[in-house]
Length: 250
Image (cartoon, rainbow, N blue to C red; front, side, top):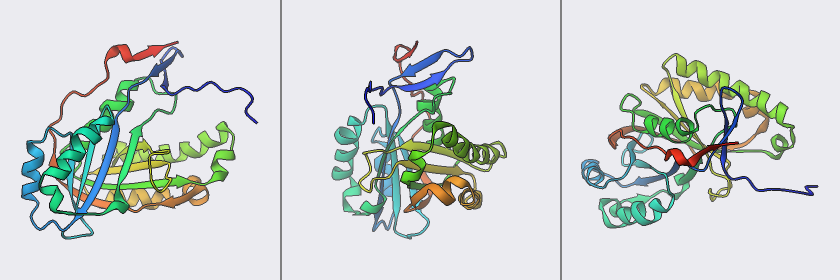
């Protein structure tokens, strides 16, 4: 039973000298998929003049399918800018695939030394990196047994995933974007994962290797659906970071 509880919604990190740092800024992400696209160029043209920040993909599993991933520091941007654009542009003529809709936020683990990099710059840079044209996006939900483990056991299990991810990244085979979606996902998923790379096969290999880990084999209740795509448009890379005053330490 929790007798006392103090809410803490800031993201947490730790400096080199061990000082705890906090940030209340993070990148938000929204993904939509559509069918019925027989010519992708009108979509590319509309996005080029939209001012939106993100990427458009051709769906590898649907010859008339596309996926659109957009990011913003304020989730209100999706309601006031992204959604009206989708309703009033050529995207309105497409067929929505609501089973692929995802909404998430960047998060920290608690040991990161650069919160702005972890929460904003890194996921944004990877999303719009032209050297990472292939992508697999999918949601996942852990089962209740994982939540019952103590923090030390959880970190050990997560460390196995981290080791594999770093190995693929250092080899130049795959990068990832990890987002939390607690309470934001209509299917009650916990996280959204984006695997990005120059080639598709290494991204599939990441999923294959992860299946053998303790987290996936024992503590994942659901994975997917998987959206597999290749970039046909990306917004131009630009500076996107929190104001320095939004990062504090204590």
